[in-house]
Amino acid sequence: MYKIVVFYFMLNKKVSSQVIDVKLRAEERKEKRIQERKQEILRVAMALYETMKLSDITMKDISQQISFSRASIYNYFPTKESIFLAFLTEEVRAWDKELRDVEESDMILSRHDFCRALADSLQHRQTMLRLLSFDWGGLKTESEETDLVRFYSHWDMALDSLRQCMKRFLPAVSKKKQDEFMACLTAYMYGLYPLSIISEKEKNAMDAAHFLYQPLSLFDAAYMGIDKFLPK
Image 1 (cartoon, helix red, strand yellow):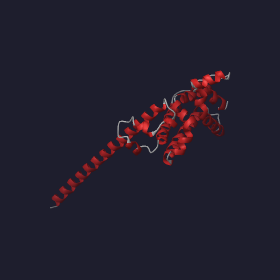
Image 2: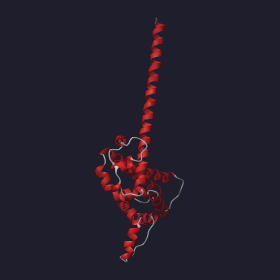
Image 3: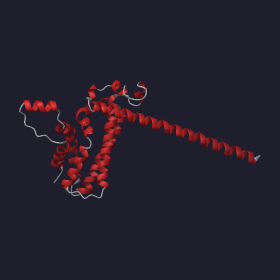
Image 4: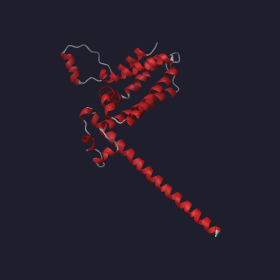
């Protein structure tokens, strides 16, 4: 009798374990599908953003180009602003990773080299700068608070990575000066895109008005600001 009880106990334990494994695999597949669909929505939205203003893009525009049910787009993002905030957050994460890669590298950077490395990292984040320059007001107003918390968490991590870079490569710069530099740089970043990316329409208008301007690449504009704000 004892052996029978033990047998059934072990059998039930094995069956329960198999059931749990099946449920876990099902949850993993579901989560994978959710992430794949979110990434598809982000890719479609950003493809539209390359040729359109955010204010002109609608959820219908995005839903018409996804491979799954149009109505289900709202299961993943409630508004178009939440879509673009999610992409902006991913851009900030990519910037953070690039800064950490610099800090963890074997490089030895002078002040000039540091300015160039930071300018180069911003040059790679053109979409991030465009969203911050032209669309941040709408994004933070129309997005869910939880999404904003996620954005600010990653923004804070990126700034911390920048601080770690400064500690390593510019150890003479005090914490107060670091804070001042990052505050100035953050404000400058909001205007960096329109300073360097000038449309043909704007060029024609400035030429017609005989307005003198100096064309700057995104890298040159970023370097100019960084070099200005960074303590010597």
